[in-house]
Image (tube, rainbow, N blue to C red; front, side):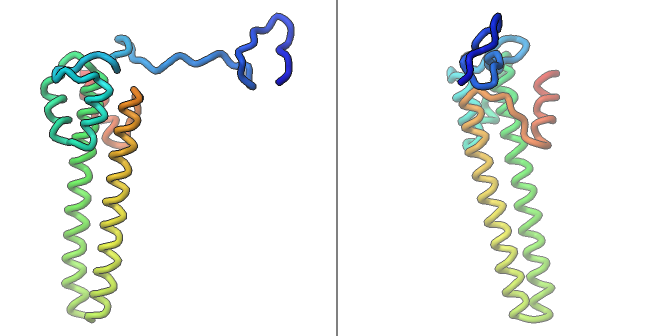
Length: 158
C-alpha cells in the first residue's frame, strides 16, 4: 500500500475512503430494541420470515419499533404473494393438463412434468428468499424486496 499524500488522513483501506457509518433510521437504531414479545427486534424480524404466524403477531402487537413492524409486514406480504403465485401455477397446471390430455397422453405427461418442475423451482426460490430475508433482517439490514418492500415501507411510515 502506498503512503498517503501529505496532510491527508490514512483510513487504512486501499481507496482512502472514510469509514461508512452503520445503517440506522431517522428515529435512531432500533434493531436491538425489544419488541412487544420481548425479543430483540432483529431476532423477531428474522424469525418472522420463516414463521409467518410470528410475523402477524409482531405486526399486530408492535407499535413503536419501525424495524420490527417493517420486516413483519414485508414477510406477511411476501407470503401472500407466494401463495397467490402457487395457486395460479397449480390452476395453470390443472387446465393445461386437461387440455393436453384431450390431445395426447404423451403431451399431457410432458407438460405436466415441465409444470411440476416449474412449481418446484418457484418453491425453491421462495425458500431461498425466506432464508435470505431472515439473514438480512437478523443482521439489522433495512432492505426492501422489489414489490412488497415499498408497500411495507409506506404502511409502516404512516
